Length: 138
Ligand code: CMP
Image 1: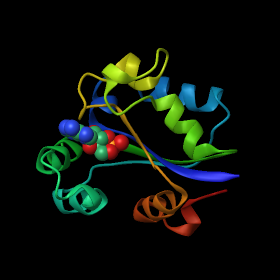
Image 2: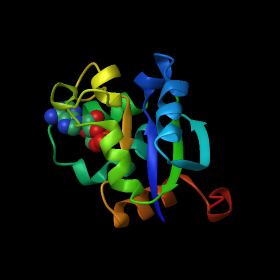
Image 3: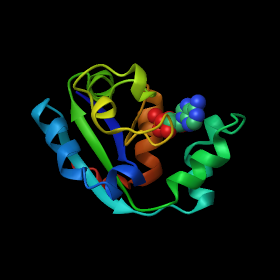
């Protein structure tokens, strides 16, 4: 069993697709074992995305991620990290496969509805960023 962090980004919350995203996760065998809605401040967004701090889109991305509430979840399942990334689709929705969340809902490479961890190490640190151990029920 693997755990991964999922974020429904401000565009996903604003567009009212929280339920649709959760339905796709659950129907693909990913179990939600922690969940909350929150609004990050700029320092928190910069810390969460610090791996991208040298990228040209860093300021825009961290501003966008503070523009409204987000839903953060811990997902658990077999191969949850890769499985969730497959359900999300490619970062750029124009490259995303048919039937993926980003293909169906994203409008922009930045405003791409969802985030998911990319490795077990990243998943552990991203889960720890948002949740205390007693909040993760799995
Ligand atoms: P995410 O999976 O959350 O990881 C980093 C985020 O940076 C990514 O989704 C996009 O929201 C954003 N991003 C990645 N590449 C670009 C880009 N070329 N221009 C703007 N934003 C980007």
